[in-house]
Length: 144
Image (cartoon, rainbow, N blue to C red; front, side, top):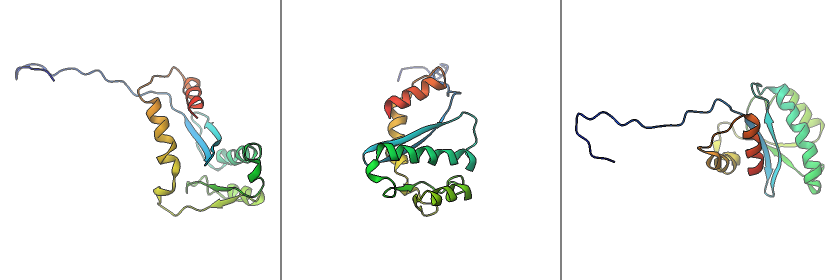
């Protein structure tokens, strides 16, 4: 706050412009921590073909990192995004005996990453400038 007359010009405030570099993080975790994370290629549309590669890598990570749950004692929980519920993805999950826990439609309260993981990442990275995509990904990896 500062004193000024009614005819004084408005103060100019400096504000940071939004970053033009963005990336999408796909992350799977359990009560012990992060099991698998992956970054989607910039400009890539997340459709069934793109998403089908994610459970393939996730399955391998569960086998390596959570061997006590392998092969059939783990349950996959993700939201109702069309790419997650595509026919080819459902066929892959059934073929590999991966149990999927269904999420009720329009139920935001069952996405723990929205309440636990992403706010922590955003608060830590807030107001920081990154040079390029690899810089963002490197910082996110360190936090995970």
